[in-house]
Amino acid sequence: MSIMKKVALSNAQVFEVVGWYNNDFKKNKRNEVLPLKLQLDLQRNIGSLIEAAQSYEKVCKQLVMNVQKEYFTEEKTIEEKKIQKDENGEEKEVFEHILKDEYKEEYSEKINDINEKIQELGKEGEVYTLRVFDLDAFVDSNPDLTVDDLYMLTFMDENSEKIVEE
Image 1 (cartoon, rainbow, N blue to C red):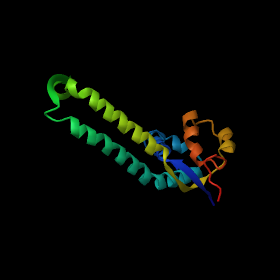
Image 2: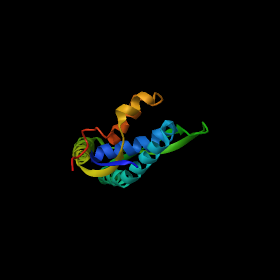
Image 3: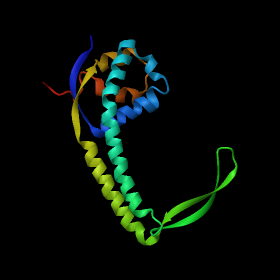
Image 4: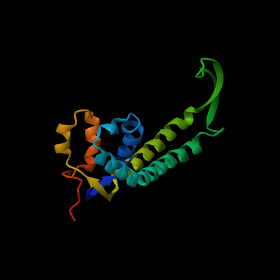
């Protein structure tokens, strides 16, 4: 039976862990070096975090898109024609919208404000009930994981400072 504990994670941590798992760890089949029980626990934990990660990502993207919609208009940009090569090596003509000089500083300030808001939102978080294990005991018996993988797995460490006492 898995040990369950309450773990406090920020929005940014949740987003980072889910991204690491889906885009790197599982994709490159490094999860297969874990014991079967730990694979299952990790997959269940990721499953419970996915919705929070997606919500955080959606809000962040929406903030940026709102600013881009405001500035990347016919009035505030100029259209430049460029030649780019496609995946087959063939040259294609593409049009790129470039922000006019008089709007660049204002746009940059708004993007900086958005980045600050995203960072603040990333610091906020919640307490999740997750399956945990003793990472220290596990490390010595599993040399096939990278330091990055071990770092990412700390969110499941039963000895983590992120554990919330009940």
